Structures are given as structure tokens and as C-alpha cells.
Image 1 (cartoon, rainbow, N blue to C red):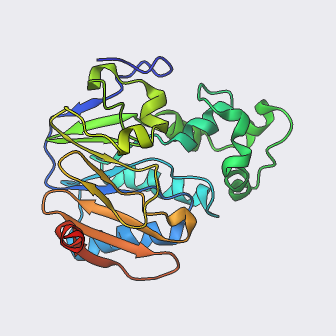
Image 2 (cartoon, rainbow, N blue to C red):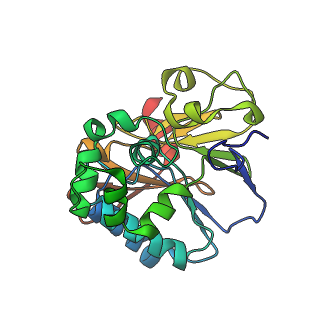
Amino acid sequence: MKTDKRSGRPNFRVISDQPRRIFAIGDIHGNLNEIRILIEFLKKEKGLDERDCLVFMGDYIDRGPASRQVIDLMLSLKAALPKTVFLKGNHEDMLLGFLGQGGNGGDVYLSNGGAAFFDSYGIAPFGSISQILLEFPPSHLDFVKNLELGVVINNFVFVHAGIDPDKGLDDQVPEDLLWIRKAFINSGHTLGKTIVFGHTAFDQVFLDLPFKIGIDTGIAYGNRLSAVELIKGELYQVEVGETSVNASYLNELLDRRT
């Protein structure tokens, strides 16, 4: 299987230790209140614990006002729920590029939400990179540098943006895993697994079964944050600015289309 040249890790890690449940959570983009409400709901109402697997689809940062606080929350979840998977999004890759830490797209980072990211840390993103890094929490930099490109659990593949539908998993490249849109969304594939992805914002969870499930529902644009439980097909959503979780099922979305 191909490896990411920058990290030396495989592009897709196969998780053989089967969790009790799998919750995939869409792009957060610096919106702390909504992800906090969602996690508390899963703990209190759904019994979320260390037997379950949370899979975050990347793009934790930028656009929203609380990137720093979101990463703090991710670090606390990493400690409390060891099965949690943290995928890399294109925004984290741009941040790493800006900081000279091996990512791509650093030259356009500030105009793609990076200014809001640095504002949440009280850091001016000007001057030398070495000075910026001195002000940046080491644990947060380690978190971003160690994000994964993709994982495979059971019959699901989890990745930020999608895959090149003309290639097998062994031949995927990081650029597509982080950035691809229409070429993936508008095509089927022959992997025999369902791709769960974020990156491209939809008004509602995007279902193209058995090929793909898109769970970025545009919280960065004032819409909603979504989580999907993939064993029973449960859907949990928090509208921007709301304090409660709307619970439903994915099959209800299919019913609305028929």
C-alpha cells in the first residue's frame, strides 16, 4: 500500500479491532459550541464510551471563531476515547504548508480561513515562521502533524475528500484524498466498500449508496454539523447556533428522494 512521503505512514490504515459502533463526524471548521453539544449528546443519550469509534473527517479549523478550542477538545477526546480516529483535511494540510511543516497550499492559507485560525490563538501570522512556531502550542502542532489520511473499518473507507474512482486504494495519492471533488462525487467505483467523506459541503447528508456518504453539511456556511452512526444508520445534527441535537435515520433521507 502506498505511503504518504511526508509522514512515512500508509495512506490507509486498516483497523482490524472492531469497535462496538462507528460514529463519523463531519467538518467542524472552528465551530466549538456545535461539536461540544454533539459530543455531550452522544455521551449522555447514546452511551458513547471507549468501546466506540469516533471518526473525524478533518477540517477542524478555520472559518469559524474557535479553532484553538476545537483542537483542545479533540485532544481531550483522544485521551478519553482511545479508538477515536482523526483524519487530515485540506485545511490542516494548508496550515502545515504555511508553517513549513510539509503540507501543501501554504501560500493560499491565509485567504482560505487561516486568518481566523491564527486569530483564535492570538498570533499575528506575519514575520518569521520560527517566531510563529514559538507561540504555537507544541501539542497542537503535534496533533495536526499526526493526522491520518484515511482508514478502513469493516466495509467502510473514511477519507477527507474522497478517492480517485479509477484507482484502487493502494494507488491513491494524498492530493486526491485531501482535495478531490466532482471526479469522485459524480462517479461510482469498484472498491466494494462505502466511502465516507467530508470536504464538499452539502445542504443535507449526501447518499449515493453503496458507493459513498458525504457528511459535510456546511456548518462553515451557517448550515449544520452532522454525525452518522454507521451500524444502525442513525443521523445526529446540530444547526448553527442551536443548543439541541436533531436525531433521525439515514433511510429517512432516502425516503424523501423517492
